[in-house]
Image (tube, rainbow, N blue to C red; front, side, top):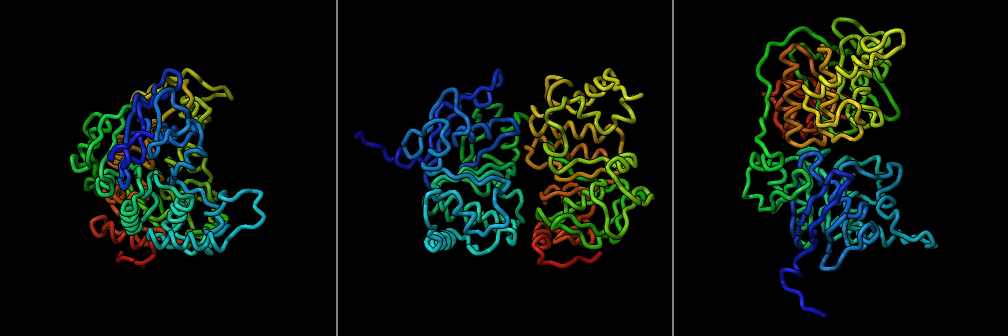
Length: 510
């Protein structure tokens, strides 16, 4: 047996010359990266830079065209997810994969025991979960039903799932995207415990301040290549953004504008859907104003958005748009009233992936603008699509390309183009920058602020508190279906918003 150097012994993960092609597209281009024991390495890159492909190769979901992976000095078999798990690799995804109706213990143990096991050793499993929680600051009751947990507690369960399977390398994908600032701070303390016990972490995030706060070093991908790999102290956030995008990035902030007439008004608005409900919501959004709505996911923001867009019916109260009370609101009626929507999920609600770009862009105006006597004017549709593609700098082969083939940032540009095309009086922007890189985020922010300048009223629902405080004139918080009174941006802090999102601060002055 050959001897191993001290440097090799300290290396947890080594990716060597990883290349992956999809037809003519090179998703990963000769990428090499190391992760040492007890190290937190940030992984940065704009949408489409190759981060997801690289992680899929690491987990065996894809097979690299060339290159190799070693975990603790042992070659990892290609295309074998079970081998990756057995080697000690665990991943915590941004969107949790938990069975809400089962207990914490059931969720963690699920899949770890053979189907032929006659009896589950729940006592031993419970003890291991409690010990892991104590060791890593991830305390959560094994008997609690997942549906009863806060978002931060659900994330603890996801991390415990990986640790229960003896993970020694953790990949955290946008781990703070759905957390309050206080929960994010608690997560960072947990990460310190991880590295103190020798665990290694790859921290994937679009939040550059968090990368600098949580990580020892950073790998930056651009166009499928590793363009930088250094200590985080060597860069500030502006330099990191420039490395990601290959250019300087502007940061936009709302300027002071006079508020116009009331465009959106909710009065004692109540709606219910499944277990979700809103309780007597009162809200006004005026022309040339952005009102931001903060809240941890699942507190009623999605239902509020559906009320405004006509997808959910009120059980009591009223919805008024531009002075017209909506008796039986519907998506078609709200579009006719001048309401445009940037939906929460661009894949499931914003675009139809199997349809062309042109088909998606004309969908909302098909009957009124792009067809006559039941026949679609495809020449007009193509001209319109080409204009949107050019104006919004959508990177695509052309209007006949499938929308599902685009990156997240380009999908969002298409939706923005469709939204802004008819100069709407009210824009519902629900999580408009979720999952986007800093360049795409800046572009979305610029378009929203330009619409505000033109006189549009904007309801901005976001879990990104920096975004809310940069763009909003007033901010309110949703907690368990209730909406606080909106307050001026200057009168609220991120810390206070975080406490309100957790239900610890009841109300501000009007």
